[in-house]
Length: 200
Image (cartoon, rainbow, N blue to C red; front, side):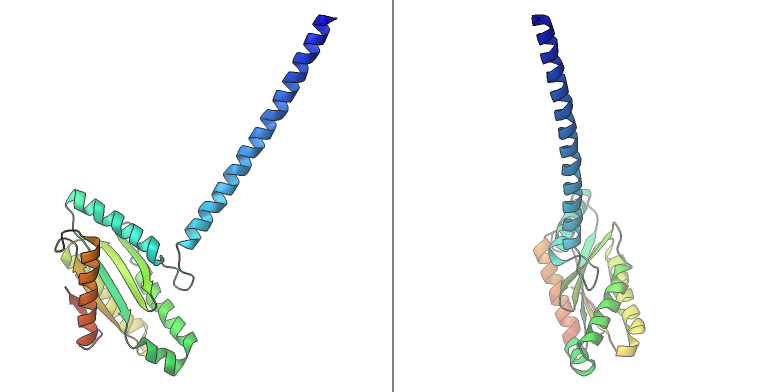
């Protein structure tokens, strides 16, 4: 009788453990699905809705990672800032939908340069940033190609861009100094007549 009771108890425990194992497996699967959804949401939050480019925070995360890697390997990299010329005038004369189309067109041009060696983001409003691994000549070549392509592809809006370029090696691979140098170069490009590339 005691043996039967013991076997019944053991069988009950086995049944309970089997049930618990199923519950744990279900919980693990649910957890994995929730984690996947959260990762997708996080990734979506990194992308600007209008331009489909990286938002500012995500872009600077990539810029800092690229800068650190280039510093360690002794490779060249730099920052390109791109600003749409007379954007307020486009909005005022053609309307905000046209302004949005111009931003999308310019961001589409920039997006073509995205690669492991080039991160592109929306810096703010009508301004964009590119973090590029490469020599000064390569970075300037990209900057000039962006300017020239924008002038051609956005001719219907008479849209051009001003571009400021800074090399990280010149600023000692300092993220803030490189950004400031590129910003000053952009300011010079705009003050110097726009639709041009200025190297810091």
